[in-house]
Image (cartoon, rainbow, N blue to C red; front, side, top):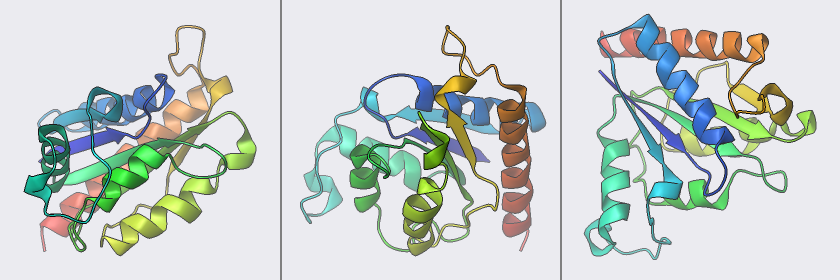
Length: 179
């Protein structure tokens, strides 16, 4: 089983670190799971132009194919202007409808204020559902204050919620795969 985490931020490290923690927690639960972090700041994903995927650059094709071949996914986004990042939205616009059918698609978001904790629920969850993803009930919001000066998550409550999300993802995907 392969779990791919996507960090939808082009700057900073908090979103990437949060997604990595979910991958790490899943690996601790099931050491046999294969994990991969796709950090969008490491790729040049082109803007969607409504043309076939092979017509885009190599990075775009690579990232989309990593997502399409995953068994389950976790998407991370910073919250900017009360919305998900444009980079993540652009990437999701490349994904064909129904591509996430029978795949767990979890959500992790980061932000400077606790006033943004529902943004992913209202912006990202509908997109993942439209693509037929199975979205766990638990998503994780990581406020900037949960990080220490080394940009490591130091809040035990956040780490606990990440572990619970990882457990929920794996249980759900196992149930879906055994049908």
